[in-house]
Image 1 (spheres, helix red, strand yellow):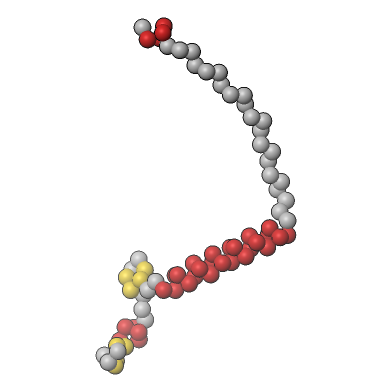
Image 2 (image 1 turned 135 degrees about the vertical axis):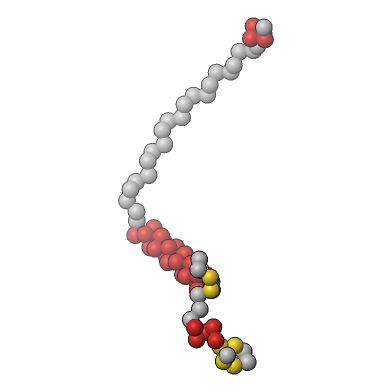
Amino acid sequence: MGSIFRPKAPPLPPVAPPIEAPSSEISDAEKAQIKKDQDAIARKRKGRRSTILTGPLGIQEDEQDATNTLLGKN
């Protein structure tokens, strides 16, 4: 019974024109900036990986490093 007294829905807004696709050509300046950003990301990733000493199999040390302690070799 509520459908008889329900107010009419407002009309839909007009459809916007389609957005123009960006050109597939990239300028040299943009290419240089992309290369610079990717190199920076790779450097940061490499720096962080070098600080991680464990892997899926546990501690990744050589046997020589494992035998050395602060007080001498064991």
